Amino acid sequence: MTGTFSRGLVAGAAGTAALHAVTYLDMALRGRPASTVPEQLVDAVADATGTAVPGHGSTRDARRRGLGELAGIANGVGLGVVFSLVRSAGVRMPFPVGAVVKGAAAMAATDVPVAALGVSDPRRWSREDWIADAVPHLAYGAVAQAVVSSIPTPKERVLPRQKATGGLVGRSLLLGVAAGGRSSLGIAGPTLSAADTGAVKKLASLASLAGELYADKQPATPERTSAGALPARLASGAGGGALLARRQGANAALPVLAGIAGSAAGSFGGLAWRKWAGARVPDLQAALVEDGAALLLAAVACLPGRRRSTRLTLVPAG
Image (cartoon, rainbow, N blue to C red; front, side, top):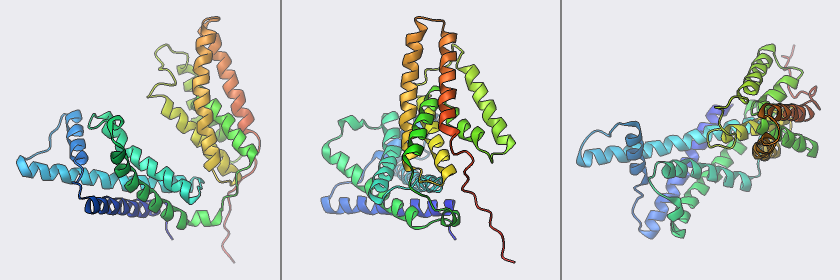
């Protein structure tokens, strides 16, 4: 039987092979030279970390090329493991949607560091540049999607996922809004409300929630919509949707999307509320009102269905 991790390795390796095959086919058909972006990215990382690629001349160039290609392989295989973990968490997508989402994720995993480190500016790319970048990554996404969807793990065979109901999607949206206000609620809400969660997990969730309620009132806390804070809130909303879906044995794709959307709305809406209320009442009062609203939304989202469990106890035949 193939587990989550090994399936991810297979998906990532197969997707990476497809990406390289399409890239080299493009080079053969159009006669274009190989991209120098991997080497430039290696140089940029070396500069950012205060190191240097050893060697001189052709020796150094060969090392740069090798390190760039190895980084690409590691990126592709690592993403395959992530996709497999997401699948195991209950997210099921139709093949076309999954292929595009995975291809876009692989493309972003390459292009975002390239842009962030100043190697290239995607805003200046031509139409041909975008096509040359998108098509191989779409091939990667298609192959990775095919692998993760066609090789179920033993647990997935035992616990098939049902279609998410409208109520579940709506509650995931509400939980996402709560997570946009207080990011720890995305995970803490389902954990604290579940009937079969252990005491250690509940205590950890309470501690994280209490810590955030305190930190939110401190002047040094960054804005929730900043580049460093917003991704964590979106991830919390996604995780909350996945946990609610897991509780009901449902496909987590729509609940996760609803959780992300709700978290974005809660983050920007909460910030707008704090700025509006802060001009009229003391900031502590505005923050406490937001605390209450976030906790109430999380309770409404998480309390229904908390007694339902998808766990199975396998008893050996006697």
